[in-house]
Image 1 (spheres, rainbow, N blue to C red):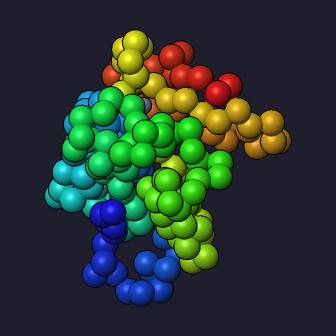
Image 2 (cartoon, helix red, strand yellow; image 1 turned 90 degrees about the vertical axis):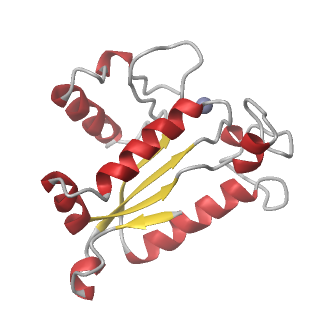
Image 3 (tube, helix red, strand yellow; image 1 turned 90 degrees about the horizontal axis):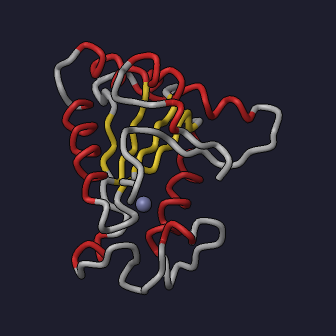
Length: 169
Ligand SMILES: [Zn+2]
């Protein structure tokens, strides 16, 4: 996991920054997800003014490859244990899915000291084209909150398509 923020700030400044968690490549065959994460990492550590702003205001926790075993043995969708790790988030076993368990532990640990503003798990879709997001099916009163980033993303680039997003999964 890479942690990116402006570490030269005062400790009290770092302490109030919210976290942004990004994971990728839970499905080993989706190599395009690695391409996206490489771009995110290179941008966040760049000298660009917006990247500097982001480092001064957020703590990024990025796991570029959630399923390295699956990638190494050439699986398309599963880990070394033969499980689709993307179907193991609700109650993962440390023995069969240490990747999911460790990621959830990291997020719980993060929440002890700061809010997580945003979590995104990057995939490559097998049939759909373009950039879009899927959100969890959420019936809470704040369910529209999940749509804020995607709609802002859509308004700021022609590469992202809010109309292709789905929040009923
Ligand atoms: Zn996937």
